[in-house]
Structures are given as C-alpha cells and as structure tokens.
Image (cartoon, rainbow, N blue to C red):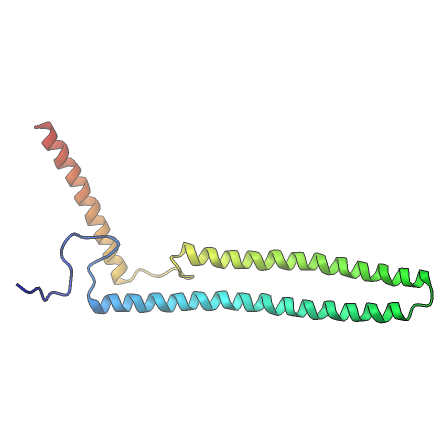
Length: 159
C-alpha cells in the first residue's frame, strides 16, 4: 500500500504542477539565482546613489571651505556681500542639482522595485520552461473540469 511514485496525481493545482523532487529543486535553485540577481541589481543602484551623494558632500565641504577663506579675506562690507551672493548662487545651483538627483535616484529605485515585484521577484522575463508549461497545461485542465462540472451541475438541476 506504500506509494513510491514521486508525482502527485491527486487533485491538480495550477499553482503546484506535478513536479518530481529534482524538478522542484531545480525550480527552487533557479528562483534563488534570479532573486540573487535582482538583489545584486538593487544593491548596484544603491551603491551608485551612495557614490553620487558622497561626492556631493565632498563638493559641499569644498564650497564651504572656499567661502570661509573668501569671507576671511574680505576688506570691506560690499566685498563680503558679493562673496555671500556668489556663495548663495552656487548653493542654490547645488540644491537644484540635488533635487534632480534625488528624483532620478528615487525613480530608479522605484522602477527596480516595481520590476522586482511585477515579475514575480525576477527582473528578466523568464522563458517558458517545461515546468511552467506543465503548470499552464494543468491550469487549462482545471478550467476544463470546472466548465464541465458547471454543465453537469446544471444538467442535474434540470432533471
């Protein structure tokens, strides 16, 4: 009475096709590899953003140093005002650039996150493998059984 068959032949579930243990393991391995690739892509995007903001912090520190030196060398109030106006203009330019980069970085992260979620945790569309084809066939068989079951139920109700 022991069942040694590795396939489950009971009620078919379109989400869990008839898989052998090795097919199931291969599917899991592929999923983990794709998940690792997606994670690597997200990390790469974060590192790019980090590098930009680190460079930005360094340029801001350089600007502050130059401003301090310029103000310290001023000999008159009008000269100090001119230095402050120049510094304010450069800061406003940097702030505008910062906002552009913030929007761009946020958009990139959102796009990657959306791809990550919409593709079932995978970035690249997978080609249909034999197990996916089997799952599609199983789903078709379930739909057919449901349709035929609906017809038999309506025929029984008529009699």
